[in-house]
Image 1: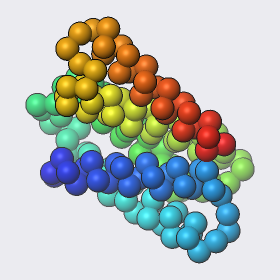
Image 2 (image 1 turned 45 degrees about the horizontal axis):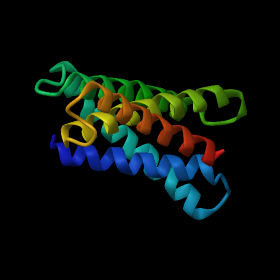
Image 3 (image 1 turned 90 degrees about the horizontal axis):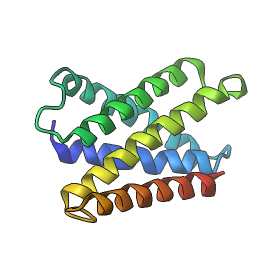
Length: 144
């Protein structure tokens, strides 16, 4: 699987997830977003399984951790396919959101580091991780 496809699926899932969490409504675009999120999420999880077996060879440690955490978020998503995102399972929805956001944040920080953004010194890496954490936190708070 190409890195571009994996990245595209991850970004699309993040955007549809933010839309679903931030704007819940009984509308046609919302229903389309649900179906797209489920189909793309299952697709990404299926594509990540062979990678997990190879232990993400050639990936930096942060990227391996990010993909692993994102896969756990995908498993929680599969649980939601079975149970539904109804009120009795609201904690599973929150766990899916939180774990997936954490995986995405780790991947974003690792990607920025590979691109040389706030890299080269441990203090700069700390600033990079703090900025990504602040971005994810602000996005989560803004979506509620």
